[in-house]
Image (cartoon, rainbow, N blue to C red; front, side):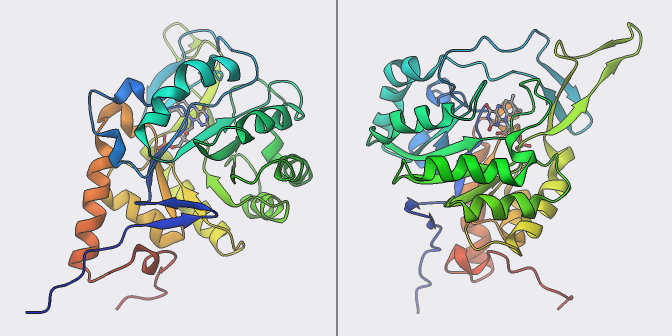
Length: 311
Ligand SMILES: Cc1cc2nc3c(=O)[nH]c(=O)nc-3n(C[C@H](O)[C@H](O)[C@H](O)COP(=O)(O)O)c2cc1C
């Protein structure tokens, strides 16, 4: 009997080699240690940290989250300990896991802060990749960097000169043309595009006539945004050459598969971690099963393979 080879789930994102394409999305998995009692963290494709800024931040006023139909709103406001404390207190645990660690970073006041942060991370061998969060909706700014193609190009090209590490640019869905912004990031030297961050949203308590979030507005995530995210992955896949890390409402294997077929090379699981901390591992097993059932040996044979008509 001919033995079918085991499905190969490994993918490459620039220089970054992943044993499987499932990672956990920034801000929904802390710094991984919080999840150590629930699962074998070493099985994840990669971990993306909560976004780090130069100085620590306390974040926005509570309430910072509320449930919405098929999703949630958050206005955390980038609460984090700051880069120095992150390196001292959080990174040692992540280093021990021996899986790729992607550090997400953001600027508070000036885009120049990205260069300071990247210089610091460039020195740390165990940091496998850097994700530029130029798309956080919770900083009460009039315009995000990722809402302007020129601003996106300027930030990405400035940091590209400073790092040999895999550079990922995370984009906001709150734009007119996501592919225009993705192209700017690619042209500036980004190794990959992560999309999508949350969609701007608001929810109101009608009895008290007050906003449900302390910051009034926040970012919408979860299954409610999945069709928007899948379309954006598809749009961007058709315009750029670098890999896409897709996210937005992934809760199971089937929802992850939608992203691969639309063109994502890897996926990130966010809000679903709050419901089932083990969901990413279940998706990894589910992908292996789907590939075996459908005679797909390499995951790369699934990426962007949307068919134009029914069989
Ligand atoms: C509570 C919460 C906090 C988040 N914090 C961050 C963050 O710090 N940096 C970031 O790039 N994205 C952050 N995000 C966005 C997620 O990484 C992800 O892009 C988005 O939620 C869509 O995926 P999902 O629908 O699977 O959650 C956060 C999302 C949630 C729900």
